[in-house]
Image 1: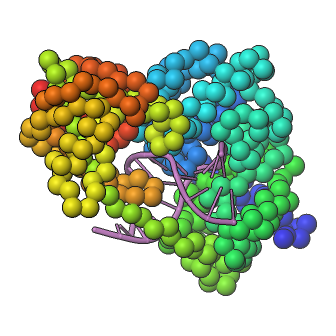
Image 2: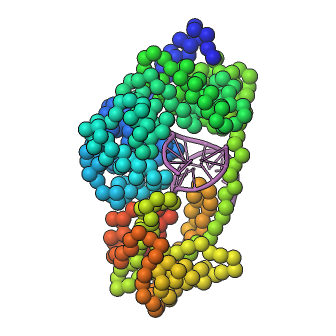
Image 3: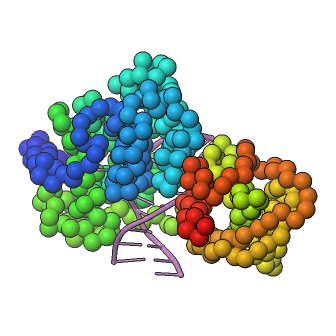
Length: 359
DNA sequence: AACCCGTGGTG
DNA sequence: TCACCAAGGGT
């Protein structure tokens, strides 16, 4: 680590840099713990720039724990639409209810209580406690891991449990006695803006004279790359079924992939099937009806974490059979112009925009 | 421990 | 087109 003299230099370099360079963010306007909590949920695996408009809209609709705790899940998910990892939204709602019921609406200020909130792990607990409550608690996110591993030439064997533990212990040992919220944010902001994954801007870095990677010219080698997971490619056919000026939508089951969101029915194309054969089979399986397939509305590509989808969307009508959906929580016939009242995954939002442009 | 969970930007 | 990755958590 650092000698006593060096750690003071390290703290002042980093905190002075942060005081000069920190970006404006809406959740930095004040230290309301609820605002910090919401921002940290949204920022999980999501970049600042993406989060900002969602955060502002969220705060207009759900300005307090009490207001969020009283909200309907569908409204909450609608505000999360397009942000991804939708279990975060469901967990944030559950956390608000828990805070309202068990903590009189005040975000708890102890590590143990924070960790009991659904969707709050060690990172989020540390972030809220240090930023909102000025407590001496570390954080460790993707940025911090990268900065730290370069600064100290750590994590040489990739991200196993042992090196994770070492990284947490190191962050804890580096915390200053005061301004831990700023210190933690500075570490993350340095990673996000200077100590970049590729082509780090070492000449602009306030820690360049302390950084072992920079001093040895090994910045690009740290942290070591993890072996990338295989991305599979699938083709999906989806149906926009029209009936008397309405279209059919269904709500996905509560947990799992995009749980609680609405969608157009359809499914994965199997080997040897045409787009239309796939759609007829899927709709028969899911809804129990035979359809007549009209013209293709659009083909979209969409990428998820572990697979890429080519989505073929068709206009359809029910030809025969009794509608009896089996795979979903709920289903509805709605007017096209009402579709934007329901939360949909991003791939479906593209379709809806097209529908409402053409009608 | 390994895998699941979204989306958009970047080069 | 494609790999990489982001203020991670749950199981």
